[in-house]
Length: 323
Image 1 (spheres, one colour):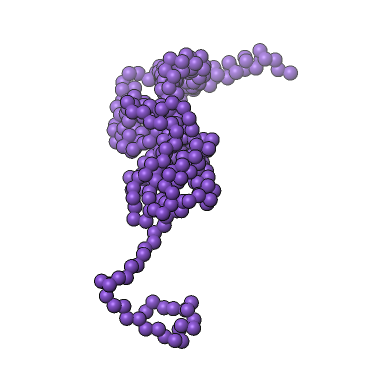
Image 2 (spheres, rainbow, N blue to C red; image 1 turned 90 degrees about the vertical axis):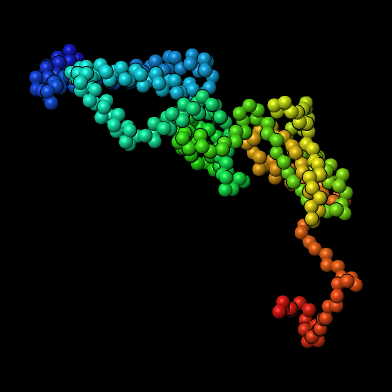
């Protein structure tokens, strides 16, 4: 049975024999050593990132910046390893200069959009419009109510990855992200102010309608129902739900309920629960929902309407036509 020493000796002799046959002017052993340098550089870069990752995260605290710095460290170590590999393959400065020139030309002709995304990625990291984990909405100018909402999954120098509420991924170049309007629901404070409008009839009890709307929001667990005023910039807003008269519309009184939700993650569900509570309470109250309707009034100034009745059709009042 061959021993470990014998196997190592055979491998050494095989490398020596193979190394005597040049390939493209470079010995096979040099190629293998160059590959070993690259592999070692990859392992060292991974080890260094695992060692300094915690310190970098404590220093910068922003996940996107931390990931970018760690990626840069890995890239620098791999670049140094590739430099040693190039030296082992006897690639002189002239060959490297030619390679860099060709690569630069390719970048200028083919990879210009990617370079633009990288530059915009630096601006995204510097401006801090959103961070990993934030809930954002991409505003659609053609349909403001049809924007895409999702969580920021990752931010790189080239793109931003968004995990949408429809369980899909969006990968958007940073050049495009900087040109779009983005609403950030969880940048500074997760509490968000929402509104709900309700149209009631003029004949109903307006104060009771307002009280029902405020009570329905206050009794919903996801709504901020008490506490000090919430400050936004230099303005302060009451944290309790408040229903006000927004407008005297054509078919009724338009009431506007303003309320704060604790987290912006289930806005439609919270709105639905508030509407359900209003529906249950308004049934027994002196309040009615308004809907479009018209009253036709005839007086002395309306003229004379000539009407004729067909006796045959009068026996069947359900049947009619509009001719």
